[in-house]
Length: 329
Image (cartoon, rainbow, N blue to C red; front, side, top):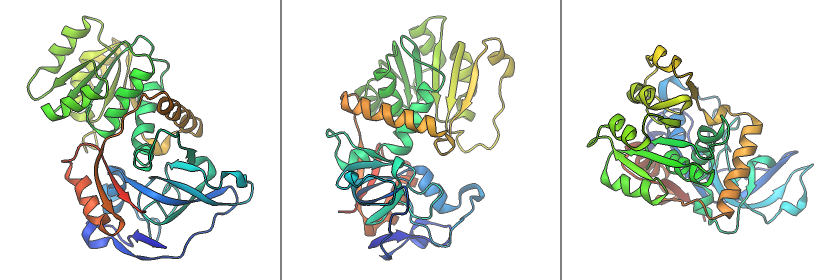
């Protein structure tokens, strides 16, 4: 099979190789998928680069956790009726050397989710990491019916799904922050009721104007180091700040008493550390939201498999809005 791999950390153009590898066979409890589209996340490029000292646990690694395709073989203890099933894949490279940047990938059967008929393969490959991160950020501390939700980075991959899942989950008011008019249009398109350009407006003043004295019951954060003081001012009493990024800051100073007096919770979110139950709940809700027509998917760029290095560079540039995908077939 054709595949892309790396044998050491480094820049994409220097370490990613394209060529032939042996086609994998499914073991007990596994399924093999003929990959149609492979999705790239920032965490995939961080793993490849050795970001912040990340170790390379395998001598050869095929990147990418997300993807979509068709099951073509199953291992023991998996129903053969799954052969031919269209699926979206999550965390393919978690605890494995081989991700979705290849013609075929083998994953535990529970990581291959039946894909709703409304989704094409590019949309399916866009879910995984960002949609599950968004789901946990929004719902991990209980229902959000009639709640007020603030999403920082509303045009980002996680932010877009957080807005849409919050809307699907019954939130009363959804606010989003963005850095440009172009991103504001995206956040509005996917369902934000109010969009604030933090480069042009005072976020605290604007949110207070919209929500009154109550504040935000849930805050989904993408840059905690930059936003922690804003979040402390805006989180409602007994509210939750869920953050999946710090803006690359290894340490963040917390305004303890400001949060304490509100009995507010600060939750860190790492999709790869979520429990099996949390993954199952996220996958179930993501599929239901898809069947309900509640999710839009924004594809920023398509690349062929042999141009995966250029695709990684595009992700690392931070200039694109939406998911970068690799078309395998």
